[in-house]
Length: 140
Image (cartoon, helix red, strand yellow):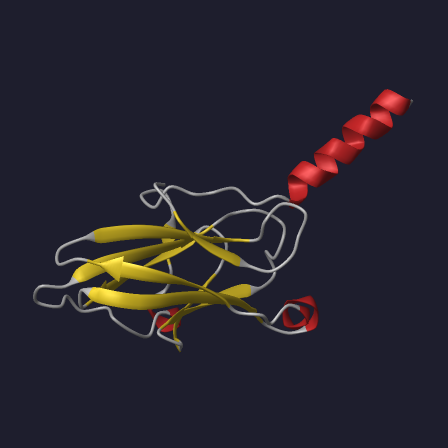
């Protein structure tokens, strides 16, 4: 019986964790939820933001921010590609919605430096064990 309870607990914990999605496998967010930086910029760069899949936070959109301005709302397993001028950017994310989504409104941000023609990938996720949404560089 103890073995069964232990296995059940591990299964439930694993079900709460999010999993990274390779950017080439993620679905593109619908255009009505992506509002900025969609046209190529001469001498610019690209920023690919992908949201993990998983149960935790799955009922909420993740609002993506560039330099403090909202530019997309991502569901789990979705990505958005932003065409931006090279330079330093502040990439942020926050859960969006009502009920439990509104209980965690804290925006997390990270600095990104893009050189001309460079492409960088980031993932948006909720760390195992819960807590605030996180944004970090990714090779996926």
